[in-house]
Image 1 (cartoon, one colour):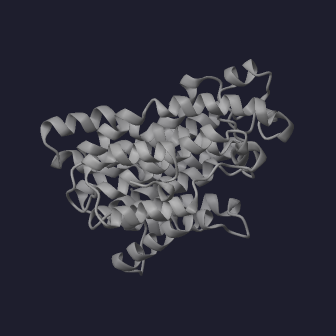
Image 2 (image 1 turned 120 degrees about the horizontal axis):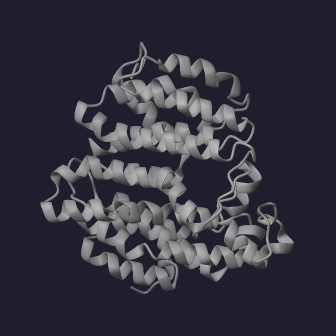
Length: 351
């Protein structure tokens, strides 16, 4: 990978990356804040490298084939065996960066800074991150090309949805595992490798279920399986229409139930993660338990993904959960927290 020259120090770039994460994802920022060094910085940089691709893939104003070309070029930048430079990618993507930039597009505009920060990481960390990030980028390019004639993505089956979720998030599960598996005992390492996919698919499927309207309205993407939509007499173009909310809700419930099928394996993954190199249980248990809470909310009011635009966990519950881990939570308490949050918001629980 050719990251280009920079007059900024590695420490300045790393500080910028940590600030950038706060702007692009409040949820992932909680994870970064819960980690310690060096894991915090490694996950932060790896996440931003993925976010660059995700922003390009989600760009509704960029023609599908152009998105695929940009993603392929970005993948070549990340390859250690390719001569494509990050400056070439920046020059190609620059005309597509909106004049009124969001935090996501600020990160895309700063791709040279992100890749420079990545290049300053230890070789072992670079090796652990590069493969999963490149798999995510190439997988996104493949899906954009698959639906280039349509414009936005139109997932056909639950199997294809899982395939997409693998590229969008499962690779991140591999990224975490790559960074930590060496420090795990053999039995725990095996558990990590067996369940990393389940942990990541749980989180991504929950996102699919809760963000139906936003995905369609903002990105022209429909991730709810078309086979399930047709069973309810729905077309992809009707998923955000309020008058069809009750029908969409039944499909949302099916995706939610499918996501919930990964809860046990995802918990096994969490319980096997070593707390070494700055890794902490809180960093990954918090998003897991927020997924539990989101599943609860989706089951109680699935139509809200259409009528309200999304389904969110109460802010007070998020605050209570983060504070709870700040006081110290061990692995043995995960099952109890999961049970409590399945029934009611944590801030309303008596336990």
